[in-house]
Length: 127
Image (cartoon, rainbow, N blue to C red; front, side):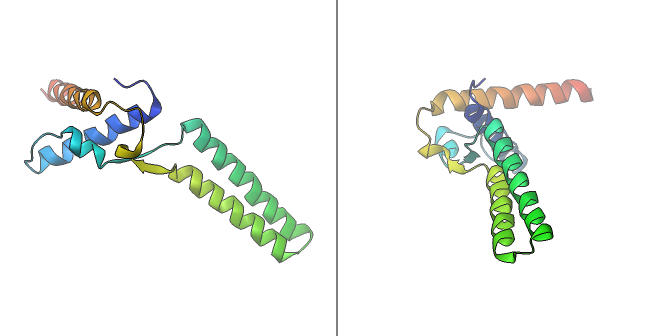
């Protein structure tokens, strides 16, 4: 399995693609199919940080509006806080082909292995 969070996200996205292809009676995925996938490149810690900071700025903007009543300042803070949270949740997705340092052939192998393991475990649980 992949070691970094990006590799884990590529494997999860590839597994979902593999499930969709098998459900549509398609063929298993290849390394070229993985190039077109888009995954979040922010680490979970960075996503939480953006979310928490955005919430703090958002609440501070609401506090400024309640205490001072200056809409020009408060709406700017509220908007910046909201956009910060949205940016953190979105996680800056990028196509896998633009992420440097990924071995697509090894990731394809990991995706197919994890997909087969998941299918075997589902068959074992249902039998």
